[in-house]
Amino acid sequence: MSLFNFWKKEENNLFDENITIEETRFVVLDTETTGFDYENDRILCIGALVLQNGIINVQESFEVYLEQDHYDKSTAQIHGILKDLLIKRPTEMEALQQFLDFLGDSIIIAHHTIFDVTMINKALERNGLPLLTNKTLDTAYLYKKTLIQSHLFERKDHYTLDDLADKFDISKKDRHTALGDAYITAIAFLKIVKKLREKKAINLNQLFKP
Image (cartoon, rainbow, N blue to C red; front, side):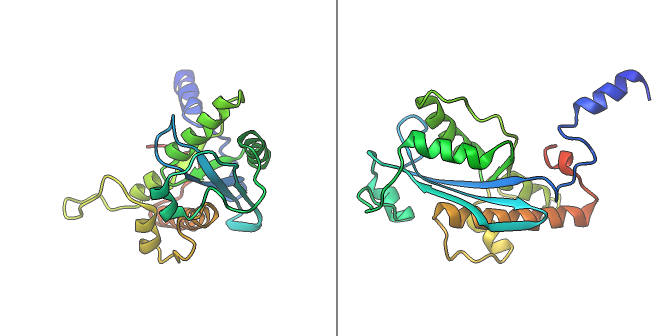
């Protein structure tokens, strides 16, 4: 192998080849928000779980409901979080600092990750905090990698978390709560990795490759 090809190969890898998927600390994330507008909507709740060694550590979970000035009646029907919920809630700044402490330098997993990460980054920006630099994985994208490439099989452009829950027979009892959706996403991720391994041996770097 030429020196050029050696360096090119190294640049294509994000992580040391000896680091396994199992030993990596993942934080599986979901946010409930007042809507889908990055500029005008706000985070109502952040839910997150640690996934490591193939285990979803429920004891090491994170859930915070934020103090709210924003309220949208239509989305409240989905997530059930009301503006006058009678519990003491931290400010956006306090909630973000708690979440950053929990997250550390872990890899973020979410379903349609760009939405959750962008909402958190907008909140960080508002509070004068640095944006997230964590590596991210999206179960919606990873799921597509498990599907058979065939003209006989019609693939959808977008797969919802409900699609994955149905496919992998995951209970949807706590669907549309941040922690409940994070738990469904974590199970889906483990199922996806298992299916990918049925095709061929995979490592951490390959999860990030197209």
